[in-house]
Structure formats: C-alpha cells, structure tokens
Image 1 (tube, helix red, strand yellow):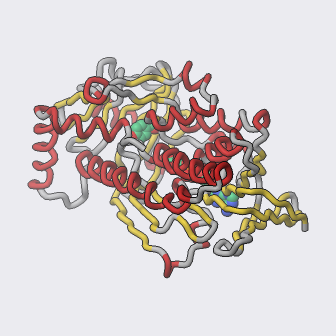
Image 2 (image 1 turned 90 degrees about the horizontal axis):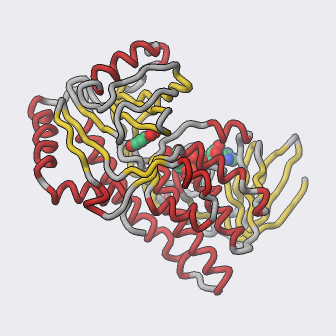
Length: 392
Ligand code: APR
Ligand code: PHB
C-alpha cells in the first residue's frame, strides 16, 4: 500500500475536475486528479457543445484557449421553432453577449493536453475508488492502480465524478435532499461530417416532437431528435434518422439537411436532478455529481464550470489568505445559480417537446407561448439572458 499526501484530491477528469485542477495548479496549490477510465475513453466521449462566456472566461483565465478561440464558432443568435414558425433570438442585440459552439470533447482534450506542462497530475484507470472520513480533519481516498492499492490523504476532496460516481454517495442520505424530475423521452444524437443545415442552432417542436440542429464546425453537424424513453439504437438505422431530420428541418433551414455517414450515434435519457447538500465536512461536490439538467439549453457543462469558478475561488482564498468564507458559502452560491439553470432547462424542455398523453389544450399552450415569444421583446430578452448564462 503506497500512501501520498496532497492538499486537494479531485475525483473525476470530466470538465469539472480538469478545470478545478488547472485553476488550483495555476495558484501553486497541490492537487491531483483520480479518474476511473483511461485517457482515450475520456477524450472520445461525445457531449454537448455550447459554451457561455462564464465558461470561455475560465478557459481564457487559464490560457488554455488557443484552439477554442480559433475553432470555436461565435453564435450571436439561435432559433426556436414550432411547426413552420421560426423565432430568432438575437442574443447579441438583447444581451450584448454571445455563445461559443465548441464541443465538450474538444475542451476536455485541451485541458488534458495542457496538464503535463502545468504540472497537473491525472491518474487514469484508478479503480475501486473509495472516500474515507470525509467529515473528519483527515479525509482520504483509496484506489487500485495496476494492481497496487494506493491511499491519498488530503485536506479536501472535490467530488467531480459525475452522476454515477461515488462522491455523492459518501454523503449520508439523512443529511441531504434529492429533487428529481424524469422525462418520458430521450435524445437520439448523430454527429456527421456534413455542413450544418442552418447558420445558427434551431430548437424545433412540432407534431412529431422535438429536434435540434446544431454543429461543431462549418463542415460538421450535430443533430438530435426526441425518442420515447427506452428506445433502442438498433431501431434507428441512419437512413431513418436522416428522413426524420429532413422532414423537420428542410422547411425551416437555410441550406437543407445534408446526409453523411454517422461518426457517432447515441441515445441519452433526459432528467432534471439536484442533490442538496453540496458539502459534507471536507468533501465538496461539483458538476454532474450534484446536479443534472436536460440538454435543452446546453447548461450541463456551463453549470459544471460555474461550480468550479466558486469552488476554486473558495480554495484559493483558503490557501492564499487563510479565508474560509468562500468554503462556507460555496453551496449557497452554487445552488442559487444551479436552480435558475434547472428552471430554464425545464421550461425550455416543456415548451419544445411532445409529451405522451399531452392534451390538445397543452399543445395549444406550447404554440401560443412561441407565438407570444415571437412578438415580445421582453420574453425574448428573458430567454436570451438565460441562454448566454446568468452572471456568476
Ligand atoms: N472513480 C474515478 N472517477 C470516476 C468514478 C470513480 N469511481 N466515477 C466516475 N468517474 C469519472 C468519470 O469517468 C468522468 O470522467 O468522473 C468524471 C465525471 O465527468 P463528467 O460526467 O463529464 O462530469 P462533470 O465533469 O461534472 O461535467 C459535467 O459533463 O456529463 C456532462 O452534460 C454533462 O456537460 C456536463 C458535464
Ligand atoms: C450540441 O451541439 O451537442 C448541443 C447544442 C445545444 C444543446 C444541446 C446540445 O442545447
């Protein structure tokens, strides 16, 4: 058994863990990241791709921004559609801000690539990880790497291990409260090297349900459609999905849907979830470990980044100025922003999807809401300011 000591043991090398590790190392604070998967697996996971300025600001602060700045697409607007009515939300005119389309996969790769030169250690394939004594003054993490049992003793543990990781479970259920909302559908996604059908994103609702036209670059498209919960990928040959996308986007888009071989296809369930509390003793949760949003509105990665902005500030204050107020207020600050993003993604999900058993009245409410949005600058501004991200 080998035993090492560090200041902050970070569990998980998703965007939350990687950003935290880099921000701490930039201040000279000892930390390391423990990741269950191998590097290739982490770098190839396909996830969403819309970054708020709160997220791009963090990458700029770290100086890990060259590829994001050159390859990211600046989007000044996006579109909401119902049937053949398309409403453009001019986020630049309404908020003075923009969003950047840059895949989470690319951002993760950039953060991992920059780790060695910044002396940020990432232990991949750390198996059977367990947290110990998190509510004591001497918390620790044990894991097995290459058959060797290892212990990391730390001042603090950052649980950045996603929805299925062990950190949240280290908090006694009696001290926490869970809020869950399941949706009766998932998103079937396809990534393909074909030009996007439209210059900006389109979130579309209609008689056949929700569809999203997104992109990664001028030559790479990302599309999603709503499918019933429990649907299998085998039921979706590529041609069936392209037919569906044609039907939904050809009437709405500038360029029409171009087909091409799938680089990736996957189905993800939709869920809203918040775990309150985000702190137990010396364990702090951040990102998907503590909350999940449905992908409508692309808030998942951006919330992970804002949690990390608060948590890194708190730890830097603690080590740099002996000030523990950031740690004391972490949960309150983070949850205030999380609940607003939960509200936004839930509202947008309800507005844009077909719900099984939805009454004709409820369907008319969706149409009326979009119609109202089309005429109301006040409502467009409210949507735009949430889409670009509320202030930290
Ligand atoms: N031991 C070590 N690492 C673990 C363990 C474990 N037992 N369990 C999970 N992990 C790792 C996962 O392999 C993953 O790399 O924790 C990491 C968590 O990363 P994410 O799931 O990407 O979560 P987070 O960093 O909070 O980022 C949130 O990712 O899931 C998307 O939509 C979500 O965009 C959001 C963002
Ligand atoms: C994506 O491009 O993958 C994407 C964009 C916007 C969303 C969700 C996903 O709301």
